[in-house]
Image (tube, rainbow, N blue to C red):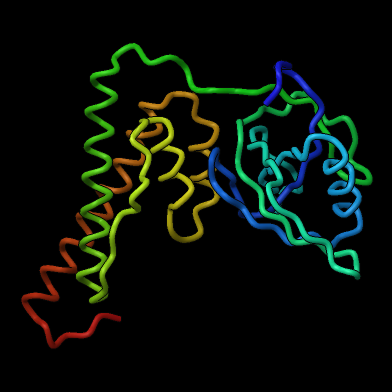
Length: 218
């Protein structure tokens, strides 16, 4: 990511989209201002910031994730399809300009050091168990074979980012909270609570389905 802890970074505000480190995000670039941004970042280090845009308040979030372009294709009409990979999180210090595209001075952020690694590792195992149960119970309810990814992160922080990125449904607000959290244990604990609640709901529905197989769920 470079040696500087503070730098200017072009921003790509997106509604209902939260990028996490090491996650892939494909984007379709068609607005003229973002075509200009794309050309600019491709001429430098292929980095820009993905940040959540609140369409109701017309404000951008304070924390986002740097995206690195790993593939790009521009059509004859000037539109581009790009594939990006989430890098380090950043905090917006100051908006430098808003036209033709947003650009800000940002500082890189990371999680705080963990004092009790054994406690963190135990929580990580509980989270993975809850995640596995949710996957299995979902498979039973839908009569499909569902498995955890082979390359599920084992590092607690990376696992917490992976889970945050793969939450189902309209959950951008919760994802933003998880992205902004700077304590790995707290982030994993929040995710465990969500997974455990989901697990209990799915277990109840599965028990109902097994007891009354002829009843169809809405």
